Length: 300
Image (cartoon, rainbow, N blue to C red; front, side):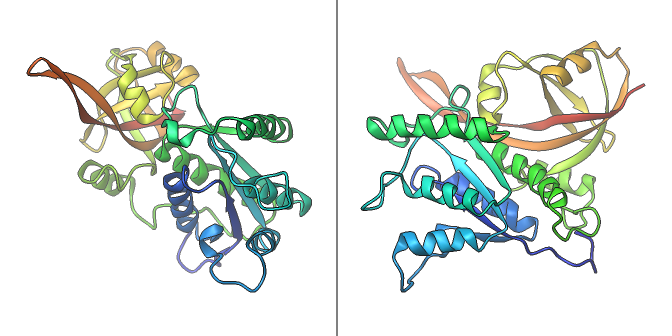
């Protein structure tokens, strides 16, 4: 947000299960804080006179927007109820007619630890809840924490504008930093500066090719529908450029030497690479960084 403009300070509730979604909650909260909203959720419950459920639902109803993060656990069910705390939070938001953004983990493209998957009756209730969410909302599917962060940074400003929240001008998500400065910081500290939107310009070499599965896993991109090339940006930096589906097809069809301006998001991720050491398979942690093209602004 530009200096001197009135900040919106919209209270937004972040609902999810906790143990399996801690990292995702953290990046969502960081993104919402970057947008200068008031973030509310289970972290603020603390010591209150009412029951945990009563206090939680009161906090939901006091907010203006609901952001729901749904993984592979249904969550704990309070005594005397048939629904989990997370489900009841969602119901309270809908009863209060809060504008809602729903994010569901992409279980087809994001590895999930067994300890973070619920089985039995809870799994069936979770399936039914997700089916309900898909019918009621335009659901967004996320993979890595960095992918979720980028989606929240994109979706929330649009939602606030549609719902009439106080947004007087364009939101400056990077606190006045230039794209060149963001890219420089991303090269040095890619994990810290992942998920930042930037406008980039580069010249195609006609060598975009299918991205390796490991890179797609690390960055939360669709395997078999993603292309990549290592190109020099107009800033002088050289980076991997990734694109999915329709945008990938457009880039592959561009003639060699085409100069392109595009909206992109910085992306960082890791994956396990098996290798042989003394006749044993050892997993080593590898990193993947690059820019994911979200929209082509101009072409020749």
